[in-house]
Amino acid sequence: MNLLTEASLADLTTALDPIDSVYLLVDPLLGEPVPLADAQNLAASAVQGARELAWVRPIIPVVLHSQITLPAHLHPYLVELDGLSDVWLGLSLEIAQGELQAAQSGGLAGTGAATHAIGGWLQSGRPAQELAQQLASLSNVHPLVSTPARYQRIADRRVFDWLRHVVGDAPLAAEFGPIYRWVYLDALGQLACLERATATTETFCATSSIPMQPVEWRRFMQGRALHTTLARWLGQLRIKQAPLSRAITAECYERTENALALAASAAMRWPARFKTPEDWSAWAALTLLHPALLENSDVQRLLELPGEYQELGGDVPQTMHTLCLSLVAEYRKNLS
Image 1 (tube, rainbow, N blue to C red):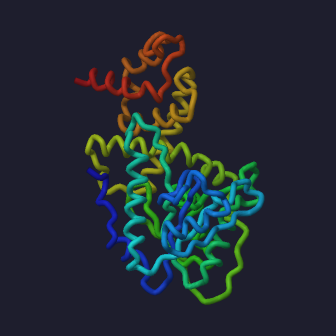
Image 2 (image 1 turned 90 degrees about the horizontal axis):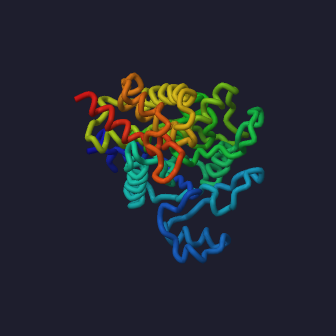
Image 3 (image 1 turned 120 degrees about the vertical axis):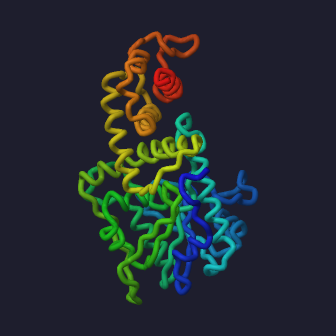
């Protein structure tokens, strides 16, 4: 059972304007969404041709700034679609839905990680190369942000959606330039859309990057933990067939942020149980699923006993990632 009504092709075509050109944004960093011919032996210089053969559509590379030390074949790219009747519109939506299901498939016991290569569906009345240049600029980290990071990976729809919630719709859309409309599948499997306030025929110059205040940047950098926690939480609800009622992505983000803050407190109390980011997301997902779990005395006792739930043949206690299902079982046993 899906958490919400699964987005359909009709929903996607309704969200798009039949007048403007449609481009599929692809992030190949963790893998191509469609198989390329002879991918194992493919030279980087031949990737463009292989992609055009696989998609049977024009491919427009998004050439990232030279300071982003990423091989060119891992840069994002655009697939130019043949309007709203293009077969790839529906197929790419199915791929995006499959990516979301893969991230959530393990539920609480999973990692929440999966490839999200389908970035979204972009529209413009401008030449495709202008869109690619603007996307490259938006992928730069603002120079005033104090960080060694250089790549703001907005081609990943999770990153784009989180950025949208951190900086706000208006500031983000103000940097769209030639991009009129950006439609994508959000963390709840719903279609989301952000548009420019106006779509004009003026000539655009690529902007530098999206400005963020230090507090916004620190919040933005919590994205990886937030995405994996959210996927584990929602995936467990899917497994238990317990859909969220009238779920709103922004509210889910807020609840997940709060749960991660609670995980920080738990890590201070039981440091041996928190060794990897997966341990933090496990605890945060646990508190989202069972808010009273932390108050359960039996759960606390098991966490505090150094000899409980140790790895077989070793002296190191299990961490939260591998322990979480056992804690849930103990919690439920004492509720009955």
